Image (cartoon, rainbow, N blue to C red; front, side, top):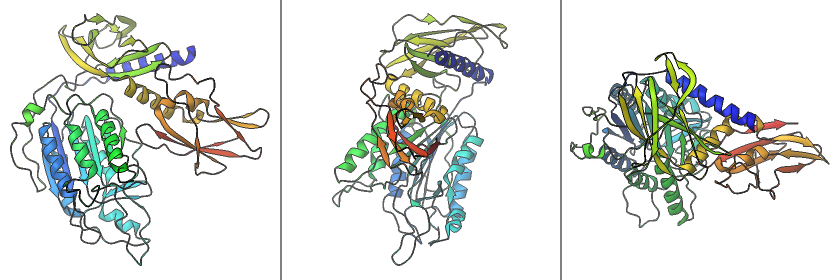
Length: 497
């Protein structure tokens, strides 16, 4: 255990040092959004609510201070021009929001957004679909190339296979979209339904809401005060799932989070959004960009990494500016406390580096940590609010550990027969919703029973839990697949004796 804690501590220092080394000058960030709704498909089934969903999201994002373009019924050529206009509006440090409602299609694990003139492909014509569609990963790459600080992508496109027609064999692929588990840093994506699920446009024939079940819920949750992106996604998932269950349908929205800090879309920009009264745009051109006043959400605001260990929480602050001192407090009224210094010289200041970490007790409640720092000119910056949510932080921390230690998920032992242990998975079970394994098959088809998560002592395995399976002596391999708490699914890992 001591070696593991030492490893964590060393990793924290390396992370802090690396981030400090990439100092960047402050600049005014802005919020830009592109929302697209495709209803009028020519060669595949038309949709009824995608355009309405785009308009609703456009209205919602304007309330949140975004400069918004709403593009409707995009052909392949128009889609490309729209994305080009979006490219031109995004600048380094910006928050970029991309929303798509329409047909989506997955081929070999890649997601394609279908323009309205996509051809009616049949079996063996997958390349026809690829060439005529927009690769979702390419949207992310473009935003990364523009150096957007935050990229948010929302897809309400998890519908049935649009290429299925009576009397023909459909093009090989899947209706809806595949999970996006390998996102770059700074990207957050939300899907209206989970893998192999379809999204509901309505709950019954009497449901006259102009929006899909997902969009009507997600748009409302985005405007809830004091909610960050993860909380918005979690609330949307719960509410949509509960609504779908009332009609005996399974629809659980999923999200994939590679954010380095909490992102709050409401609040500071709301007042400015109320002054923007221009009508929604229906063409592929962005309205003039609205620059937001600098705030505590500046690109120079500190970010924090939370790590749970037996003694409590370690919080590591990362600050882009060279700093001469760091102080913090919980809430708005307590006294600020200095973090002290470590025995390392910062080459930019030629002084001892401020200690970038603090400790919190294991039972620390959700709270706002106020952080301030002294810059190289000796001026005090901040305080900057950092939201501490113990449950979300625990899940995120354990998820990262599981991703880093995938080769340790299972281990074989010979003891009165053949056993396969999954002690490692139990130790980080708070990040896991379900574990499936396959014995001598690459298809995990059995569910492993896991004890419930205990946030007070999350890594301890209950004494009554059995952390292993008894296997037949001839067993050669075991495959495993994890469904994480956020609904995302891991790659299938195979372990051989």
